[in-house]
Amino acid sequence: RKEVEQDPGPFNVPEGATVAFNCTYSNSASQSFFWYRQDCRKEPKLLMSVYSSGNEDGRFTAQLNRASQYISLLIRDSKLSDSATYLCVVNMNKGAGSYQLTFGKGTKLSVIP
Amino acid sequence: GAGVSQTPSNKVTEKGKYVELRCDPISGHTALYWYRQSLGQGPEFLIYFQGTGAADDSGLPNDRFFAVRPEGSVSTLKIQRTERGDSAVYLCASSLARGLPGELFFGEGSRLTVL
Image (cartoon, rainbow over all chains, first blue to last red):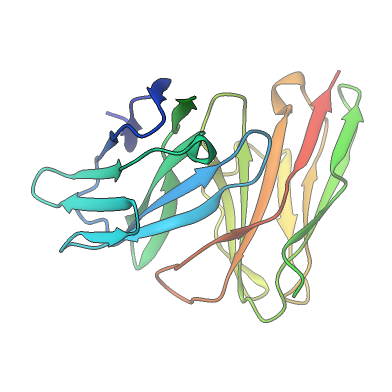
């Protein structure tokens, strides 16, 4: 099983649609979780952290289910500018006090006019 | 303020050559990371520095890859005897946090092409 797994997509959705991305991780001792956004041929940038209680930032909602080792990102009212690749990132416990930020392959989103 | 700076932005080299990629992190960030990203893949961890020391180099694929950060700021990733499979975007990131990393700030990357 890969350490961080995502559906690569692409997800092609019309403007205004709601879209959800899922991510699963293998290491149950993982401590923290993030969604990063990466535009084409650009560097990844933090979109939001993911908290156990779930958190929302405008049109974006992130959820964490530790029991199922599952993270989700929901985007409401999609905009053309949301088109990008969304990377699920997990802070993996590598043992002996060592942690490593591990990225999924990313899910590509295209919002269509 | 200045972000993470990486040079060169593009490097084309021939198989078997030696390459150095440089990263200048955000001032005051003690943690520095190198990742490698191939087309259609997520960033793959290579090495992590806390200050001058490599805290975790478990992602370096083999002994042709080496990285240094002698003064705790600028880092250089060195690749010996390059192979075509080394072609990728090499991303550097820095972070303020010790221990559990918070937000990573990435540079724009160095795109390496090995012919």
